[in-house]
Length: 153
Image (cartoon, rainbow, N blue to C red):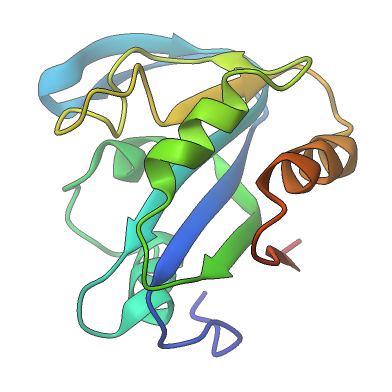
């Protein structure tokens, strides 16, 4: 499902992935992990050619090589929302710090999406279905630049 809603600009994003059934998945070299029912928030950034549009459309594509940790999860789960911010400054590590202190959100898998940095993880989990509340809480803590939300289903 490619979307032209996303800008070609550089920026940081969150994929909101819904998992409907408990499932154990092999995540590349990271290992095997059980993903339980709920919502997962994956934080990433895109500073390469095509910007956010190219990266987000790749994540939304059904036919791709499994390259990044998130590719394994989205093959099984459903991307329900995308939150993004246009900025020439990489913010994914700051966003991961913010997610680590949000109420009702917890780290999901150690080093997921964060094998090349010092962050504990770039994947967070909540059992709550109130994703809108989590979005509002996240935006209050980010404050400097507006975060856009695209609801996919």
